[in-house]
Length: 282
Image 1 (cartoon, one colour):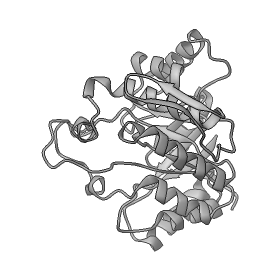
Image 2 (tube, rainbow, N blue to C red; image 1 turned 135 degrees about the vertical axis):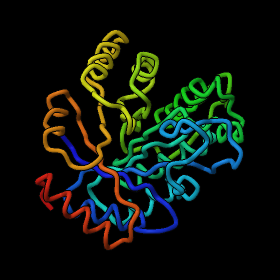
Image 3 (cartoon, one colour; image 1 turned 30 degrees about the horizontal axis):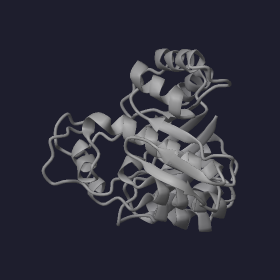
């Protein structure tokens, strides 16, 4: 298994560049950041972990732009892969976002993947003009439109929410197409969408036992005619050697640990200790 870290970015604590560089030096394989463009003050949407409008962390109000954050990380790293856990492409125009991601992949030498979510905060989505009951469709169309721009010399797209005529757009990603990872609760509906539109699964922090869910994902993956196996990225809490061994047996391809909301020195110390427990080679 690969090991990575996710930094819940904010305007306090360690910077993304510092965290990514420290993680790479410690031997970690991947670096993730989240996204919220803004948080509406008055919301009907309940947070998945609190069950109401209460937010579990004030960093939801303070997240940095993920693409700027990853660009700063790109400049100070050479090997570590760069991704989002998760971004919300439905909130962006796909032509502009395709350019941003292709540029990031080009400048990083092909180290970018895109972790996406449907968006629990339907009030936030509504401010971007995304109907709550169409968020999966909007996300699918935005991804399809971006893939057209990434892979086709003269790209065009016609959908219910995205339309553009034949267009040129460079740079193209270094990779054939940027891998897409779906961050969503494991279930038949999400896994069917994933098998049709994405390349892997990012678990949620409250997922629970993964064995039955991974089995379901792999079955749906095959039923949708996909070859190979989906990437499975498990979000972990504290280091647990027994759990990690179990996940490896189940086919988890990557485990990602969250960083504490502390000052830069404390986060660097945490990364060093975690790397030692995992047996990583700096």
